[in-house]
Length: 537
Image (cartoon, rainbow, N blue to C red; front, side, top):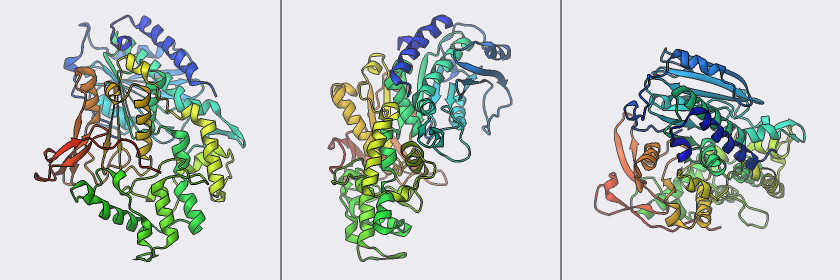
């Protein structure tokens, strides 16, 4: 990207970036697996000047930046900050942008590798992502994070969206959805240019969940700001998947007058895996492609469990959780969890707090609203209201990535099939629409790639091989042209031993066992074409 790779005076850089920011802001409307790169300070392109020192850091506090109401800068030499240890010496800049967007920018001194890595948040945000910033800093990156314009008050909640009954706080909603990201990018890249005397050679975004959505928001609306975007388990389609997360609770309330027993969820998951695991040729507790599993929980009716007999109503709740939210006419509103994924987060004793707050504060706009009053018709009405109210501001599902592509950007997405919070088929749905909009699979693979991770849960963990470095793959693609085709993932035991490796395949391919080699070795698997798309309704 010419904007960020050119070595130009900082003032000229800032002027051009602010022009881009203004256009993107108008477009927006006004209503983790944090990887590290092998890059080091030794491969930085420098002008031969001495590294910045404490006085250079403190001087940043005197900068006059648009819409900034407070700014401080201090060198950190103790090796610790915000409960993070083993940190290199860095300059810590804290700033507030109107009305209440808090941003932190950490600028390494002697260890700087010439690159910038912004990191994303999770849930409703409300905090600075210090652990992810620390990981980036240790790897030599200048890094930044934002609380997105509101401060979490002890509960991962969405009440910031409501001024009072019936009155949405559109300013804070937009700040959370996009404006804070544009402001953080502008301010951080300006500070990088001021501190080091030149822009970063490469700029990256790294985020999972809400952080994944944030990365895609930037690719869609600020397309020339980042050379590479890593969007893991992205919380895109926000206006639809968030209300859909409440669907299992609504069905349980209607069918059982309360939540389904936990042990019955476990029985259903084990039964689905037992039936469908052999379909991929290796019985290992992991469904390589859960779309091939059509297990019906109705086959469990009458079975004795530790928490009582499995009933027809229990089967309806489990099947509904897998099938996804439906309209009253039986058509699909959104996707469900796949067989094999843990069910308790969405179908357990209590609703997922983000989904419940979305109903209460964002849709009903009533702090006292009780979701248990929703029947199937009421759920559908609220689902459609959510689409109408929030798609434009936070849906983050614009499939026209032509400007990002033209700027030379690379987008790397991945999603765990066993994600228990964000429906993985929503990501496939978006990527398929990107293919349709941007010239088909061959053309899109030149700038945007998707990997699905069997057995991996939300952002990390799970029964499948769940340790891999997507960020390193993104850096290699951006800087050396090595587009990833397959990425080796490892399952590591508690004592640090690698128990299994498996290739993660470039969508739409899936890993297929050769029938002869060690099934715990990635070398025994080939990535072969598979059907595209999501499970049929």
